Image (cartoon, rainbow, N blue to C red):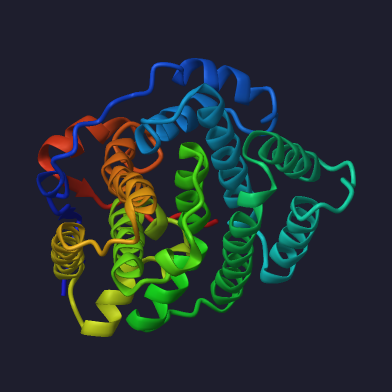
Length: 323
């Protein structure tokens, strides 16, 4: 069978009607945040990403969100090329400092220390416990992903979904929705089956759409495509590449439909909590629509062809190259 040279993306924008609004202080947040990010040259793109995903945030909230996303992007850059054992060391250094232990003087340690200091100053100790719990799950999942990468292990679809929810870093990003709006939802609200289903649906929509958009870049790097939903679907269901991409698009549509149905039927927890819950649900929806917009703003996935790819949805498969 001849290998495909192109594939067609699902029309994810057609599913999403939310208008994108860029927060006014975005440029200022990028400038302020960049001083803490000596290793990252794409600070402006990070700020655009934050403007797409937290469009309601003020200057200081945008700055904190920029700093966190910069930290995540740097961790991704470092750990993507490390062995499982080295990823464990990196994450151990990072999380110990983020949890309040002294800085060891390394660039990553300094960034982690600065972020914790600024987080506490901006949002206070009440929000940091939930944030750290979610971030620890992310750090642990990145270690597991690296171990799978070392073995070129391809998970079954059900296991992949659970693992991807953790290693995407989206859970702590969703906690920042609360921080940016200065509220703290009770645990029983976030654990309610309807809210949990909407949370997980947003996670999966983000992860699957990101995997669809990043597949071409990842398959071109030997071994890297093993942690992407497209090859997982291809193996799990014996699908061709295009069939797998189409399946992913249909699944994202089903998740969005469920999210909308749940939003209409939200349970009530009292007037004060309900008002904050509406802001949280709005924040989840904004993350999905903002993530789509950003994917065609950054050259990360489609390079200089991103405008053409957005119009046609046709992606030319890149040649594989060594890591």
